Length: 389
Image 1 (cartoon, rainbow, N blue to C red):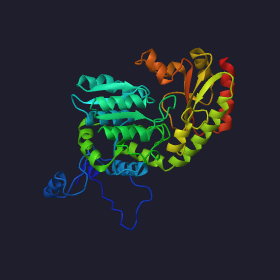
Image 2 (image 1 turned 135 degrees about the vertical axis):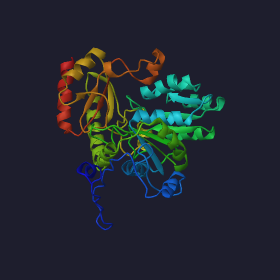
Image 3 (image 1 turned 45 degrees about the vertical axis):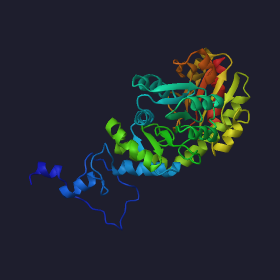
Image 4 (image 1 turned 180 degrees about the horizontal axis):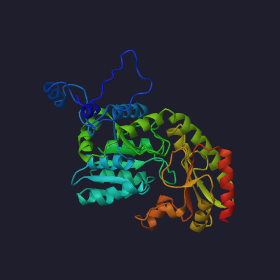
């Protein structure tokens, strides 16, 4: 062979069966081949295992899917390019013209937008309630045949807690699927409930370092199997190298999540006593209106908290600008601490009454606590609150 040919057909290195790598390799390949046409056809018919094209599956992405499914306590998983791709892909795969969806004011903004705008274009109807309105949920599901109920717990940004057992029971009674955006709680929590699908932004706690984006849909094998073809056609594929980085991040997942939750608890308790702050929203606080419910449902309360500054949005902006250890940036769950001032907490699609029900006020600030020493973070928060006036 000429040298140019050799470069495109390098020598194959086979690892002996009793000589496994400690860290799984990255299968950075779009294409896979079988030795014969007959075996390729058998694969296409589903008669044998294997891989063919990255958009359908890949050994590295498949390892991540199985890891996440096991962590959430379910049988199967689809990973994709972002958390929004997981949410929208699931909604698109599960609904059709004439269906009805129940969603909530406290949902992630892009979720509300996709349901209210994109799905509506295809004839999917919706009802928007507060996550605290269980009576309204019962009434809607009893009166309107509903395809699915999509919700979050804890909610973004004010950490309301959904009553998972009650929501799942009423949805099951009326034949609706339940989709829980479980990003804030993390994939190790809430698996004990009768939830059909869990949605995650892997960008957050799973990857954990703010340097890779991904999403996941987790559920039973039958439901995930039906959805996989739709996700393949939508094409929002997770790259194998990104999948490897998420898989690597998961090795320190519990160490990070528990330490960040403990720091968030200490910071929430400090903020609760500060005269400039009207209220603090963190499920780990005894003052949280749903603290007992959160204790029953969760083993850790997460790294995200919010609080309401008495002096409103301008003070919130000054506070965020004065912080030295918190990056003023979106996202959460990473090793670095982040702040969102009131000006960056968007709920522009909600009317005045919906905004009141959401719990977002004019001085709402959201913090995501990282892995910095909590004493340093507390000192930074104290000086920033003083600077805010």
